[in-house]
Structures are given as C-alpha cells and as structure tokens.
Amino acid sequence: MVLDQEKRRRGTSLNQTVIDLLRQSLGVAGTRGNGVRRLAGTWTESEHQEFLAAIAEFEQIDPEFWSGSVFR
Image 1 (cartoon, helix red, strand yellow):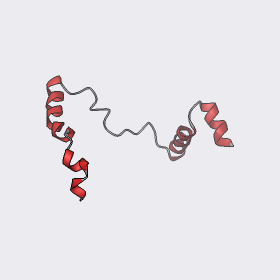
Image 2 (cartoon, helix red, strand yellow):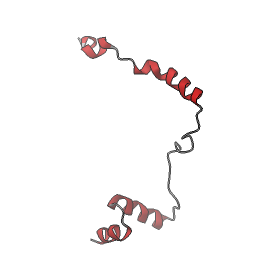
Image 3 (cartoon, rainbow, N blue to C red):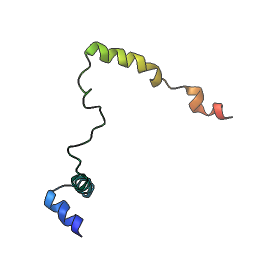
C-alpha cells in the first residue's frame, strides 16, 4: 500500500501521514492549534489559586444523587 510506504518513509503514524498529505495537497501550511497553547504558563500563582477556588464547588460530590435516590 502506498500510504504504508509513505508512512515508513516519513517515520510518522498513518494518521499523521494522511493529515500531512491532505494539508500539503490543500495548500494548508503549518499546524492548527486549539488556542490553548497561547494561554499555557500565563497565569500568576494568585490567578491560579483564584481559578481553583472558583471551580471548587464543581469538585463536590452530591451523595444523594449518586446513591440513586434521585431516580426513585
């Protein structure tokens, strides 16, 4: 199979080879990101702590919900 040969030549996975070939044929340069990279490492320690405090409520488990009594 031609893709298998190309994958071995490039030293990448089959998925990555296909993505690279598609980008090349479509003239799409570079890699596409999800926007998170630009945020990485930009918070101060106090901003990080503020974020953790803001999401702390979502870390709580409601025992009544998980006991199944909500569905009875």
